[in-house]
Length: 314
Image (cartoon, rainbow, N blue to C red):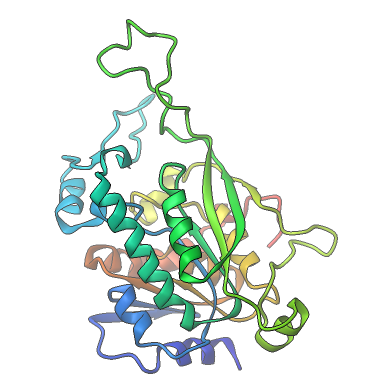
């Protein structure tokens, strides 16, 4: 079946979602991802790459409005650094035990709803952070996905490393938390049907696509912070660089065929990476503001040339 046919099959039973648009081999729907997943046919998605809302609360309408107004709320608006305005960061340390339990239950429900839509052997790659990854990982495993490790995005961030608040002069040699120099992307898989080779022949899934015949796909990907020029194309607080996403997205379909899903697609960066490497993709975005940005941002990100500056040839 052609990749466009797969994308159409995955969406053909859809009800009247609020809005949708397409670009190239990508389709984007404005919808709650759980609602969308419940409407899909079984065995239609071959891989998932997504950067979900880590704490849910920071992407509520109230908190997003505060972020857009520059007043923060749960979002910390860092001061400029060497004349450059730094991206806002959600303060996950303020999450209550109830917030953490809600996060865990959400991802348990999400994974249970996702599994029937996946073909056997489909890779599921989920961005997270060191403070919350244990909750998300546990929920996905309990839902029935197989944990396969983590993809490490090596990147220097501005998270952590600070001295004690209001006591930085008293304790000048102290970092309350380590400065974050990596980002975990959880790696799971829907259980195979039979052996890997059997699953590859039937479903086209079960492994990762090698960058070249003599180089295996690795679990560490060097990355830079998302450049200002890229953020201007798709203003989203969690935007990841095309350089990193194209390497990751290319790898999730071992035979280079199938449909990639991003159920929390934001401004469309994962879909842009899929478009750049020639894959069909579907994105779901609940926030009308980011959905509108994605309409313009997706084509620009897909054409973003600096996204190819990586040791892996695409």
